Length: 313
Image 1 (spheres, rainbow, N blue to C red):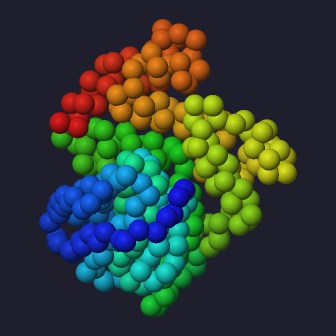
Image 2: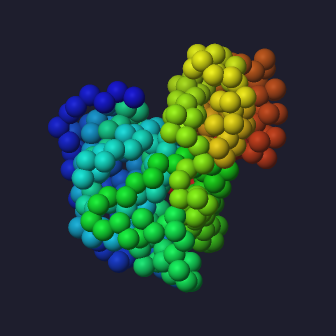
Image 3: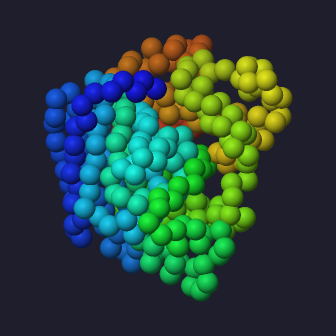
């Protein structure tokens, strides 16, 4: 991702108790931000942010919120690198669990269209979830004092897919489904700390897995195979796949299919003709592409696009 420095565009977010909605155009960046305060009794709030840029652009988000909360983020479209106000950095591939000492961050976007989902809970909420003594692995998060706490961890793809499904739900229960997905995502990261207090992959293995995932995202139309990436990294395919599964909660090959499907959906939503998408992703005919798409979504591509357009309205 390009990280060329430009003057940051500031987006100030308050600490309102009701749902906040912000839209702003500044130079080449169009921003929208919506917050659901979590009124379902779970104590979890969630937000959906979109940044459309000419890329690369930097956006500085500032907030009046006290640093008594923990959050994580899920990239839905595009990608980013972030630097917290305290100076700690993290990437979209493995944001993990973060308790900032100072609220606010600088985001650097390389893609033109970016969307980020955020899930947040207060430290009091997290403690209450355990209903008793906080497990040893979670104590540094709760009792870390004034220092920023950050434990990088990739989100399993099945949780990301559950979130995507919930966000596309147009029923009256849609917001509750999104809230449930936010709780599952935070719960996954907390459970990872409960297990042994440290990630279950070494830093090197985790780095290799994230690098492999980045290579998938760079060329979803013709993605490299597990064997090709393993050879490039100088490790065995079996070792890389084990690291990948530990880091992302799924096998490399399943992830490859998900990355391709996400890219196909993005291409269709950007207006690329179905015939061109089918050819670009290696299908021998539009009929074969439509059949594969319907097996995945339950709808043919054109009907799926109509459903997505109705949701956006």
